[in-house]
Length: 328
Image 1 (tube, rainbow, N blue to C red):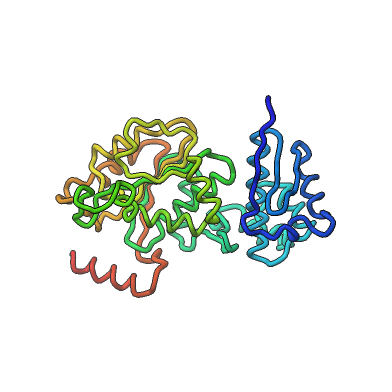
Image 2: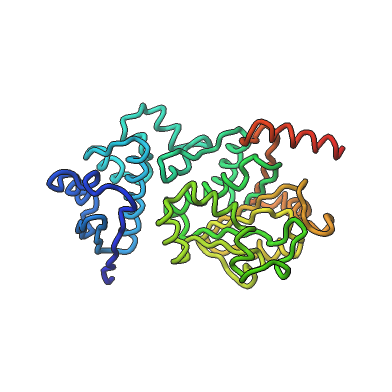
């Protein structure tokens, strides 16, 4: 197999922090990847070797960056610990207790991903932990709940986690482009300008979990894709983590089209709030019907989040409760 050449940017990580004095820490890094040829060039590392090994190396560099931004230090021992075992989170390299390490790396309460500034992203409520459990054991998960319960955020964190662990090769995020009574044909601008406002919540979540340059590069090479639901037609999504957001605004036919895109080694998650249907006729929403149809199918799970899972401003819970009482 021919060797692959790639140049990786440090994305803001100080070269001295990673390389050390007289390249002492860089030699440790080289020792963790004996099958790769590594050459340090300022804020870039030139890598030559097997494509899969390079992918693992790139993921480890991301972990090292996350660790430094979180803790403000990066020793040779920490580099060795983080790079030697891809399943370890930075807390282990930092000398955390075994109990803390186990909590952060296993189970529903584990850290799913560290953001660009080292902030841990994990399930913060019991309902969100149930969602993580369901995603760990099912290939198709439906999750419903009111605004602010972290449906989309947790789903995207699970997707980024799967990508970093190389369980999937890409992330595909989609949502219906019909909301608040607007239609694309009556909005100004080209197609991207019309679609971006509908897709902005997905961009926001990704920006919390991936460094800007890394996210931009992954979107340019197709590793991360964001598109309206209509663009899913005709595709087969293999080895992908696919999230359909705002699914309450999809018809039964659209949901059937979406779910039948599932390819080999794919994970699908469908999120929605059945109290916020923006279709002209709420009866057109197919989310509840699809969940009922597939409720007994093996490999399919349904998770319902509630007011106790709201993680926004405390007033959001009171607002949701007031509207629910009004609807009764």
